[in-house]
Length: 148
Image (cartoon, rainbow, N blue to C red; front, side):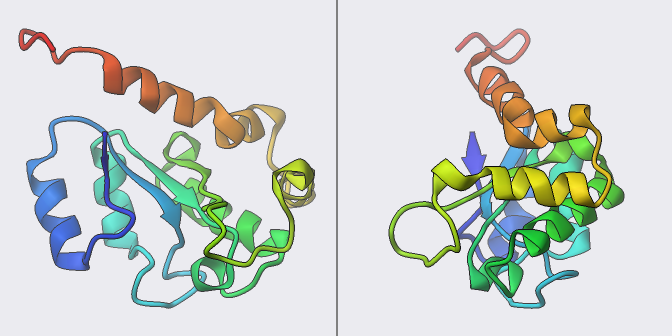
């Protein structure tokens, strides 16, 4: 599974141009919600989706220009509305290097923020792990006719 989370925009374009499997941005944000250079543009989001991949939305200020769960939900909604619910996931980056408003035991705050803006239970299940599990499963399956 190729992760573009720390790649430059040029590297992202090059990776997406040669991708034969779903590409993942495991943790980050979207420029439409938080206009920092590291975040993905709508063009990049569409290209990740075209591979069947997912965008993991982070919880820290540099990813969502806030630490408010409402901004996480807004970013998730942007990806859903742009390319579909199957292309968005959680991307916490709980590695100790970033400051977040909550820890994993309080992830219900994200669930509530998604419910507050009208996400369905099926959409929430997809975001909260379903999409990631699908990508992980695809990552261990051999390419047709290629073996492992």
